[in-house]
Length: 280
Length: 277
Image (cartoon, chains in turn purple, orange):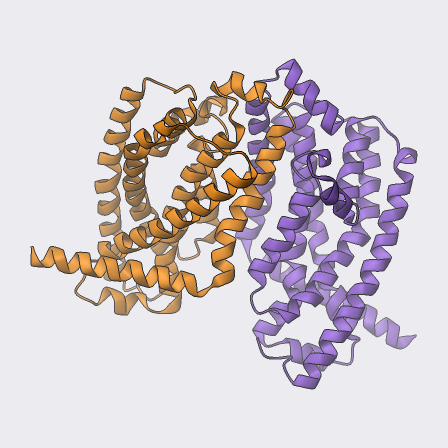
C-alpha cells in the first residue's frame, strides 16, 4: 500500500514537472490562444466560399452528408479535436523521447518508482491546455460567428469529452511508448496526426471517405468523440442516443492502455538488453 | 563584373548546399509533399466536395466564377508553398545557421551577406518546384485536377511574386536574426500571410479590416492572376491593373527588404550578437 502511495506521489510530481516546464515557454501559451481561433475561422470562411455564401442547395447537400447545415459549428468541433490531438502528440506523446534527448531518461528509470509512472504521468499535463482550447473555441464561435450553443447540449458535450479523455490519454501513452523506437519524432507526429485528421472527420463529413477508410475510422476513438459532440450539439440527440458509442470509447480506453503497457514493456526490455536507453 | 560573377557562384553554391542538406533528410523531403496533402489539399477537397450538388460545386461557382474545386485548391497550394519557402526556407534557415554556429564563418567569407539569402531563395525555389510537380501529378491522378493552357500566361505573375517574396524574406530574415526565438513568429505570420493572399478562399470574404492588408500583398495579385488564367476565376480588378500593382509592389518590396536586412546586419555587427541565440 505504501508503495502504491509512493507511486501516486511520484505520478503527481511528474505531472507537475511537465506543467512547470510548459509555463516556462510563454509563447506556447500565445499559440494556445492564436491557433484555436485562426485555424477554424479560416475553414469557416472556406465553407462560405464553397457554399456560395450560403446557397440553399449547397447547404442542403452539406446537411445531407454532415447532418447539419451549421458548418461553422461543424468545423469548430472538428478543430477542437485537432488541437486536442496536437497538444497530446507534440507534448506528452514525445515526453519520453524528450527525456531521452535531455539524457534524463536513465536517471528517471533508476528511481524506485514504477516505470509506468514515467509512461502515464506526462499525458495528464495536456488536459488543462486541451480544456482551454475548448473554451477558447466555444467563445470564438459565439463572439465572432454569433453561434450561441444551448446550455443543455453543451453540458452533454462536456460529458462526451469527459468520457473521451481516458481513450485520448491512452493514445498519448501508446504513442509516447512507440516513438522511443524512432530517431526523429517530428515526422512521426505529423504522420500520426495526419492519419487522425484524414480518418476521423475533423474538417469534412466521414461519408466523404471511401468505404474502407470509413471502416478504419471506426477503430479510432477520436472518430466517436467528434461525431458524438456534433450529434449532441447540432442534431438535438441526447446522451441516450449515443450510449453505445460512449461504452465503446471506454472499451477503447482499456484496450489501448493495455497495448501501451505491452509496447512499453517490450521496448524498455529491448533497450535495457541492448544498452540503448540513453542513445538517440 | 568579376565580383558579380563571384557573388553568383557563391549564391549557386549556397543553393546547392541548401538542396543537398535538405535531400539528406528523406522523411523531411517526403513530408514536404505529405504535409500539404493531409493538412490542406485532401481535407479542403473533401470539405468542398461535401457542398457539391449533383457532382458540381455550384456554391464555389457562384463565389469565384468556376466550379473547378481541385484547380482552386491546388493553385492555392502553389502560392502557399511559395510563401512558405520564403518564410521557412529563406528567412528561418539563417536562424538555423545561427543555431548550428556556422553563421559567423559564413559571414566572414568575402561574399556579401545578402547573397546568403539569394542562395537560399534559389535552393528553396528548386525544392518548391519539385514539390509542386509531385503535388500536381498527384492532383491529376487522384483528384481530377485540370487547367486551361492559359496557365502559361500567369508565369510572369508567379515570377514577379517570387521576386517580391525574396524582398519579404530579407525583412523576415532581419527580424528573425534580431528576435532570436522566432519559431512562433514565423509560423503565425506565414499562415496569416498565406490566408491574406487568398490561397484558401477569396480575399473578398476576409473581414473588412483585413482587406486593405490583403490588397497590399503582392501574392494576392499573383494568386488572382494565376487562378484567372488557369481555371477562369473572376479577378478582383482588371488583370492589367493587377499586373501594374504587382510590378509596383515588387519594385518596392525587393529594395526595401535589402535595406532592412542591411540595417539589421549593421545593428548585429555593432552589438556583436551575430553568434548569440
